Structures are given as C-alpha cells and as structure tokens.
Amino acid sequence: MTRLITFEGIEGSGKTTQIGMAGAYLKAAGAPYIITGEPGGTPLGERIREILLNRGAYPISPESELFLFIAARSQHVRDVILPALKQGKWVLCDRFFDATLAYQGFGRGLNINFIKGHHDFSSGPLKPVRTILLDLPVETGLGRAMDRIAQIKGKGVALEDRFEREEREFHQKIREGYLTLAEAEPERYRIIDASREAAVVHRDICAQLEKLMAR
Image 1 (cartoon, one colour):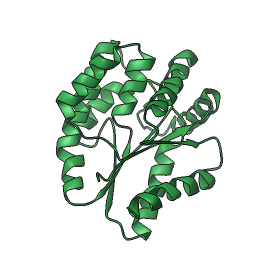
Image 2 (cartoon, one colour):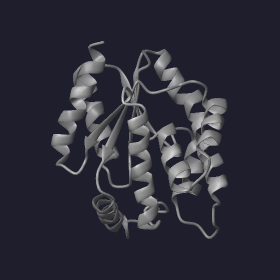
Image 3 (tube, helix red, strand yellow):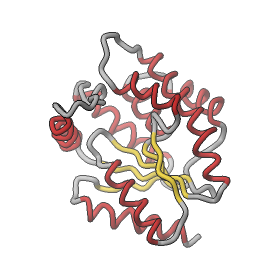
Image 4 (cartoon, one colour):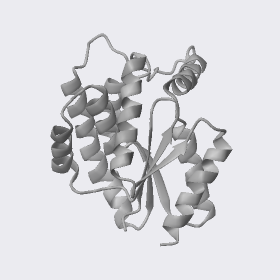
C-alpha cells in the first residue's frame, strides 16, 4: 500500500491548515511522515510556483500553465515523494494530479485524456491511497481566501493570488470537476464538508488516517 495521501479542494478550503493538523496527528501516533505540496517541494518547483501563483506582467496560456505544473510535479515526485515513500514514510501532499485535472482540465477546458497521458509520462503510475477532498461552496471558499490575502497585504510577502482573482465561474467549474472526479473513484476519494469549524473537519480527517494506519 502506498502511503501517499493528497489533500484537494478549491481556494479557501483550508487545505494548509488541515494538512498541518494531520501531520501533528501522525506525529502523536509515532508515524513517520513528511508534508509537502504543489507546485513546489523542490528548488525547481519553487521557481515554477513563483511564475504560476503570482500575478505578473505577462499572461500565461492554459497550455503553458499545464506544462509548468507537470514539470514541477515530475521533479517533485522524483526528488521528494518517491524517496519518502521508499523510506516508509507517510506523505501528506497539498495538491497533486487531481488538482491539474480540476483546474486545467475542468477549469481551463483542456483535454482530460491529454492531461492524464502527460501525467503518466512524467510521474509514472504513482497514485494516492487516499484523496481528501475538502469541499465547500465557492462563495465561502473565495471569501476565506480573500480574507487571507487581505491579512498578507502590506507585509512585504508576495501575494500568491493569481487563481483567487479568477472569475467565480472558473472556481465553480473546478468544484464541480473535483466532485466529478470523486464520484468516479469513490474507493480513493473521501469528501469532507470543509465549511465547518476546523476542529470538526480535523476529526473527520483523523478518522480516515486511523483507518489507513490500521491496514
């Protein structure tokens, strides 16, 4: 059994908070783990992240966006995820392949099969044992995301808000895309209501982690 667990969801779904709390749960249970995320996780991935998430003076086409995400993931899988799995560690990953399907496939309208083929080429057959989908209404998620951005402004930190600034329709397509993916793979996906308090959401995630560790 692979020990890769991915966390997915629209902007403002609380992935960063929940993945940190999940790591603390594994630590308390004595389970070796790492927390990582995409795009990023490697020096190359972090440079690509700067291009993808920060608004710049130049546009990025959907096709270019796709290939940048794939390039970052290929390096991430090779340098971070596979070595950790080989060491017997749990890997908690903030976004993975499903995010590309949801954002660039359903959101941008690129061909799903084309995306899947390039993922297989760049990252091999690696697949999460569990994907936690933190689901909530688009309005709620975007409201949270904008509140977070407002708190960061003025602190001299680059705002990673290129996707948050997209139209509401784009985010709705992403949410619907995630739910479509979850319906197609119910054995892997677990949909969790992320509109609730963080502690309540965390309890549901811990229940999933407990079941996986008991295997």
